[in-house]
Image 1: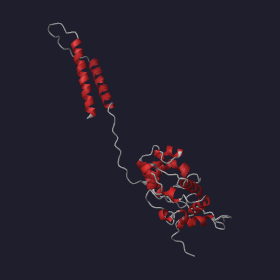
Image 2: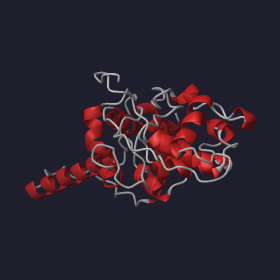
Image 3: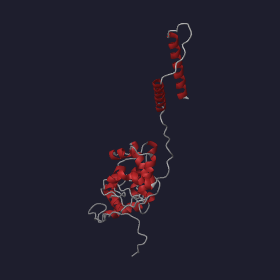
Image 4: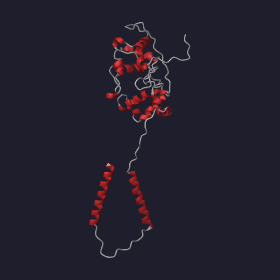
Length: 275
């Protein structure tokens, strides 16, 4: 309707201008009107060219309307191409070689989609990922997530170093972590990690609880310390404060033990024989 009103105003202005021009134009002398003459070939060609240019200008002035299609579940094949730029940091199959960058292999589609959206909006701060996610559409995020969900995270090796002193003296680091992962730390209000992430650290397909098994311990330590210090991903209604509440009672040593236990965590081989 606004567009039609603008056209109406423009037409009125043109009509007024034409009438004013007609009023001030000298009137022809009284007498018989001269007979019309046919335009020459050159004049006809020039006139046709002018009309064509005017028509093209009119068409060009109308912007094209791009209608985005509905977002559908991710397509792993499409995601393989879109994730090409991710390989530099996260590895070709999502198993990064550098602990600075998390493993994405085996991660849930919806979880990856949510994190990419948080990076794009600035609700999760990371200069590299903000730039990488800036041009991604919602469908791109779903496709990339679907691709990594088809991959398998490689299991790491848990630290079996014995703790020399302190409340966990004579225990191995991974043993400290295993106890917290399976039973929590009730005295400090820390729940068992299995409640949300499952006994093998697989999490669930929803966006809330990621797959953890096999993740680099150094990366997990950094994230747990961030949460323990009150860090939150997301803002206002989009904020997720679960982890900042869950791990606030952990010490640095306990975080180290938990992270190394998670790195070595993986589902047992179904064909393996029990000893």
